[in-house]
Length: 282
Image (cartoon, rainbow, N blue to C red; front, side, top):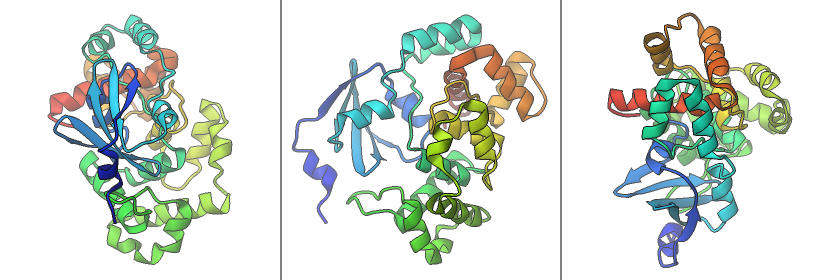
């Protein structure tokens, strides 16, 4: 099969003018299908294999014919100057991090793909998550040439006899159950997407395999609740060391939401990124 990305390479790249830094945005663990090679990032958005190269004032895109899809994915409506200003006024540490990483953006991921990915992400590091996601795409997803699309719930159910080859471990049953719930309609992502933050979190946590951290990640990256503040081991560490905040998940997440307000998710990503850099990787 011809490589669709290769065929696009003969065309003039699409220019996207947006305030963004691709490295921290695509490399900080929000989404798990991006790969960097040289000066460009390659990934899959919907049914398109795309290649992005950062340029002054934005980036050039190959492989995606839909400019609107790229703008939505990178949340082009977010005013980063306003967001940076608001979270920086709330906290000197985040002010410093924001100044050194001004173009980091929260991504707006497909809710189904985001939820399914984070169900796989429980108790796994970024590298392991990426391997599981790609194994699922390779097993069930539509062939796009160079890569495969993230599978639909129906595609997973139709091919579930081969899921053991994906090596998902205890996550396997939850993953198939999630696909069945979405396909049969007992999990209504459209309805969840219309809920406020608290109701959204409660609805997500009613799904097998979704705890408070996964729910906050999906609320933030899949449903656009920018006030969500997911807490993992790295965020827990920085909250203890830099803010003296200890306790369970609920106490730490509530601290982040109170301190940083409606853009707490952006503050969380800056804190996460700083911890990842200190640890030598995502």
